Structures are given as structure tokens and as C-alpha cells.
Length: 208
Image (tube, rainbow, N blue to C red; front, side, top):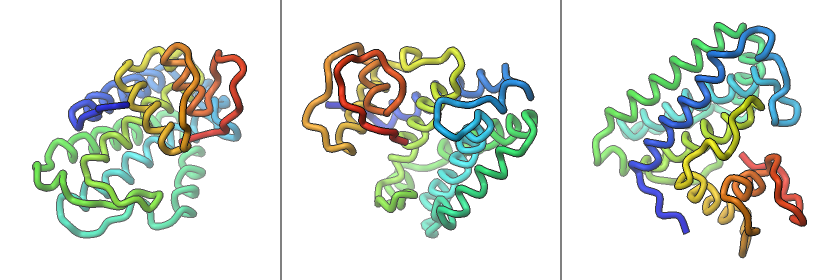
């Protein structure tokens, strides 16, 4: 079972953000429109999603800071429209949005007090959680989607303690009594519905 801490999640946000943004810095107008690992999404869709996610989680941080209810998104339709519109931006515009949104989220989280971190907020899935869950939500996004870009980053590039926490999280959400044996990165990839090397396992479908 995972014993992740708030400090762990904050560190994983930094690690995943660095992995994700480093790849985007290498991509240009030729590489970003190419397909990502996620069906139906190009890399541009993925960058727009990760940038918009930072903005949305920033709303939860603002909620924790002010106590004023500030949902992540006004609606699922608005979320999807933002991603679709973002995917039409140029590579330079997407990189600027990605980097600015990540910086703003990081600065906003760093400014929260201990009491503010204990404020209850509501995720896009309707779960009520303490604000201390925000870094974990972001860590999952940047770490897993860094792999989804389909470049040279794999689950093996993610910290073992993050993978352990991810496996525990997905296992709980999928309601699995047990997980298959195998290397930690491959088990995490399998549970997340991503390409993996495990044999004789049932298809679980996509996650995140």
C-alpha cells in the first residue's frame, strides 16, 4: 500500500513537469501535431489538456486560499472546448501557455498556509477532498502524460515511489483485489491502460 505524503506529491509535480516541458521544448510545428499515445489526441491536444489542467487546479488552490467556491471547470463542455481550441494553437503558443500555467500553479501552491491546505475542495469528478490532494492530482497528470507524448519518456523514467502510489491509486479506483506481478513501470503502465510488456493479462481499458 502506498504511503505517499504531501511533500512526496509536491516533489513528483516538479519531476513530472520537468519531464513534460523538456519534451515540449524539443518539439516544433512538425512534431506537436503528431499523434500522442492517447487515441484521437495529437500531442497538441495533450499539451493543451495539461496546460488547462494547471489552470483548473489553480482554481482549487484559489478556493483553498480564499474559501470561495471555485470549481475546476464551469462544465465538461467548457473543458473539452478549451482543449480543442488549444490544439489549434501554434507550438510556440502552446509552450508559452504550458510553462506559464505550470509556473502559476506552482507559485500559488507554494503560497498556501497549513490551514489553507486543509480546506475541502471538489474535484472535476465531484469528489470532496482536502486541498492537500491537489499536488497528487497534478503529479498524476504531468507524470503519466509525459509518457503519453510518445517520445522517449517511459514509465521507467518516473520515480519508483510515484509508481507505487500510482498503482495503489488506480487499483483502488478500478476495484482490483490484486495486480499482476512484474516490473513496477510495466505494472503501472498496464493499470493505467497504456502500452506494456505484461503477458496474459486482461485489457483494463484507458484511465486518466
